[in-house]
Amino acid sequence: MAIEQRVAALMESFSGVQQWEERYRMIIKMGRQMPEFPGELRLEENTIKGCQSQVWLHTEFTDGVISFHADSDAAISKGIVAMLLSVYSGSTPEEILRVGTGFLDQLGVRDHLSMSRSNGLSAMLKQISIYAVAYQAMAKNS
Image (tube, rainbow, N blue to C red):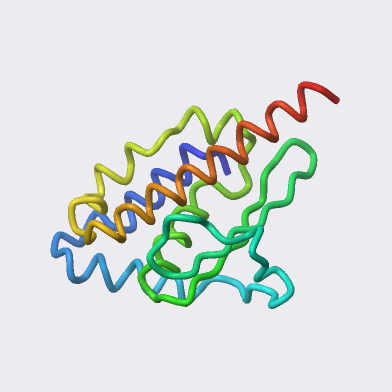
């Protein structure tokens, strides 16, 4: 599925829910549905700096596609990273950089997070972009 289709699917899943409290529950549920994150990947190098809670992000780059794996020790952070991975994981670096983050604004996610959680979201997005740029450069140089 193309990244634009994953964005559309995410937007559709939230379309019938107008109350932020219900969207908040949906985001937390997404986190609970994430695959188990292996303990051996809970390394300092996989920790996203700038998040209020612990968030780990591990990547694999195979056949030009980035797969992201993540976890957090906080339910809302885990849900937020799960939401991001539902869009970005399985994409090429170019797709990740092209699609941007406008879907988060359309969902109103940033508007309903505390300042520290919003900073954590920005840190997650920054780390995903850094991986995309790095893998894009690596692919061009190979």
